[in-house]
Image (cartoon, rainbow, N blue to C red; front, top):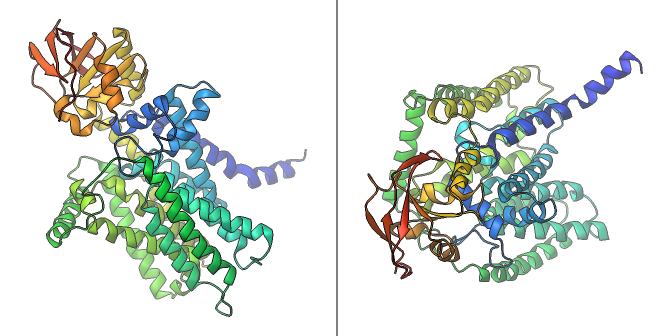
Length: 500
């Protein structure tokens, strides 16, 4: 093969190799198998994968929302490839993320833009690192399939069998995304409104109207049936925030932003990234207005969809009482991170013929590289165990044999992810509101080999304690294992009962 041909092949396919490397690095940093800061929220997904029962477990344990797509896909890796539950979760998550990446990257024409999006998607900024495991990213990944399908039939003859099958598939994709997280409903409404505005004004497509109406009716009955398997309730989940609550929400966000911008969080790269992004956004918007390049941007339906989606969710989260009660958690804003990132990259991609745009492209690359390093930098400076995978840390409990662990919520489920059969871990009875699976409590309390973790629960181990109707007596000295202070207890009465 000639040298010239080799160079051409490298130019044509180099970006695929770079993206593959990015995905592999991400997997070994942030997948459930390797993430050092894995917590009990993540552990629920692992335990659901291990104990999965269809159709009772099609929603996350104890939650009134959240379709358990990851545990369902995890069954393939568990039973076909005989993977541990935590490995099955890791592979399932990254399979879905890969689908999302391929779907969204189809919107970019430039190979460098695809690489930048790969970094944003798989090696995210520290504040949004949950994108690699949280179900908001899963929801958007599924929506990306609908975007690809819509592009295939856009301005095509919708009366053909192929187009109508595609329309039916899009309806099913929308239903699945709403099942995963009903926030998708807002994105779908925005998407349909944008598509309606950008349609061919010369004609009203009757096929689209018919399928839209039939799709709404079909989705209503399908989702109503699916939600019949969900018996959990959440009185505050769908409530609108009060005016005072909105003011408090804004105050929480302002406090969080100011702490970062004033370098008060001891996260140097997070603060640098934030300042650079703000300066970039201000400069970029000014450039779009001054050069009238915004007129080119608004002609693209997908850029406008992602801009509106980002803005909408800022408002939705301010109006949500549930988000306020959860301290305006940054994991919610993964949705804004995804939409705004795609909108910016698409706009830069579209304006590539403007000479000055290359400088904005360079700026974006610098910002996202700092963002990619920021989670590792923060973990290395704040986590005593450094970058040791949490799975490896809690596997130390396996040396105790078949045991039950009772702990505060954040130290409970996570303690059993390495081997759920050998280690049954549950929250203590005063933390019963966080109990996600009653059957797991019953299984755990049948065992006589019981250990308590005092971290975030007690100052010291008491000589006697009552848990779930069983009296436990201290049987040994405390020890430090699995990055926790743990002590063995002996069961002297077995009058099991659940808290009222």
